[in-house]
Length: 438
Image (cartoon, rainbow, N blue to C red):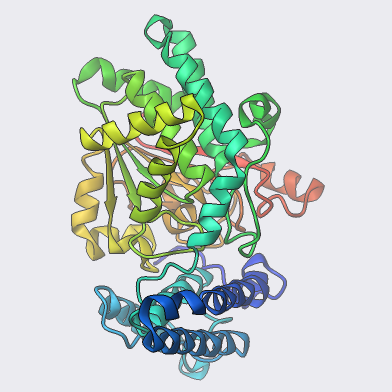
């Protein structure tokens, strides 16, 4: 893109992108291979000898992938026919076209980090699709479910808080309602800390009570556009009968629970009349939400032996049935493209997002795709970094886990770097970064 800085990549030795490709991604592949090893008896019980052979084949393909990555081999086209195979291979050709003759082919440490990281997860999916009858096995399912179960205490306190608020929500004045809105936004923000791809698939559950920590966490919000979100939604609810908020999801487990709690609050407070969620069509970045994860979590919550948790599950299931909570997936979310390409690559999805009054983009991968994962200066306006991606008013809700952040005050980034070298990647800091008409 003309005038835009270069993308982050593994070429910068010592950078977070470099360390991710060098250390974290092989670690994740090793965990995936271990998972398949551990399930070999299950594959045999379900599918007989064919299941055993399929497991061996997937392990062999993933071991080959790990070797390609660790030895910086050229990135090869996808071979298994799937709905997005051609788009991926065209994108690989596009990456090739950006390279100088002398550079040869796109490679793991030399191509944009966003591309190679997405490509790795797409190759994990390809290894499974090449290995029927275990082609629908989610290699990350156990980790996602573990994250949910280990976060039970936090989930109980969250659902209890929401259900107790429901008793008096009709009586709240505007300031009280706004205060609660800000609370649920912050819960959704800090829920984003639970990211299994950042921890290399190690446990990352929420074990402490988030609600009681909100005041202490406020100083770590670097860009805080919550007031603008309140202004937008309170204005929309006065102007029109139906208000639609879209939430582009990130992690399942605890974070998805915080997103559902936020959605429930928006509907109950009448700040929105319908919420549309967007998840991934295939297992992605270890802990990202798929339709299976979404349905599974609501089912788990509904069958909780805690009355307020179970009440939330029943309410969410009813909202799904009444289309007040709507789940979509689209193959675009698991492509390597930055979002400014969406109107060309997935015009149907772009048109769907244009129906929203507000879009909330959860998490780091969404932020990287919103901004093109480029080496922007910290002070570049968010609107500019979005590079013509403006389907509707939107807000990034993210804890920082990649070396990219725009829209800061002059000197703010430098000051943080001087006192805390890992501020961009530790997940300690968060943002509510809005773009849209005032």
